[in-house]
Length: 185
Ligand SMILES: Cc1cc2nc3c(=O)[nH]c(=O)nc-3n(C[C@H](O)[C@H](O)[C@H](O)COP(=O)(O)O)c2cc1C
Image 1 (spheres, rainbow, N blue to C red):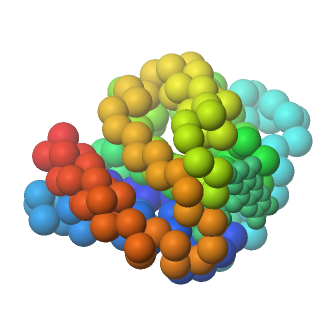
Image 2 (image 1 turned 180 degrees about the horizontal axis):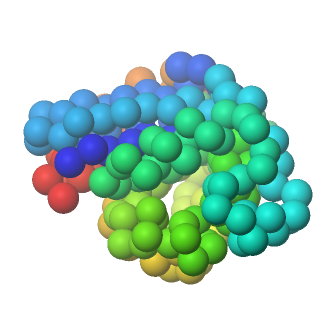
């Protein structure tokens, strides 16, 4: 079982990075192999909608950091999408990556993603569930479209400043437990 975490925050060592690290520790404890891709370290160009991926065998005409992300996703058994709420949606980094999933939507790409379990880690500053709802709906619809079962979600509200989640032992414990379940998939 190979779990790939796709970190969407531009803030290194922030709340979502911390939660994702706990998820991965739990997955390792359950016997999984884990890999992390911090999207902030990559040069990611936006999908231009050129549709060339539909008409040739190369995955995408853009030459950038997504080449390694495509390879990592193809090799993974399950994907962990990690992002803070930014204006009620994902970060630009996470959304830029997701836009490039057009490659997985074409017939030749479908087998690389179809049926692959997806899990989500989301954190944000406001209190209550409402601020995360549009983002979670985006994930639900996108995973359903791609044929990815949405198996787990960890949603942590009330964490704003970097490090705030370290004061939330119950959230860290939930992350660890979620990781253990993912590691047993
Ligand atoms: C550009 C930007 C937009 C944000 N938008 C929201 C928001 O709409 N709702 C909210 O509750 N928090 C918002 N936040 C706060 C972050 O979600 C919060 O600080 C989160 O813990 C950051 O996670 P990170 O440390 O992993 O980067 C925003 C932060 C930034 C920098």
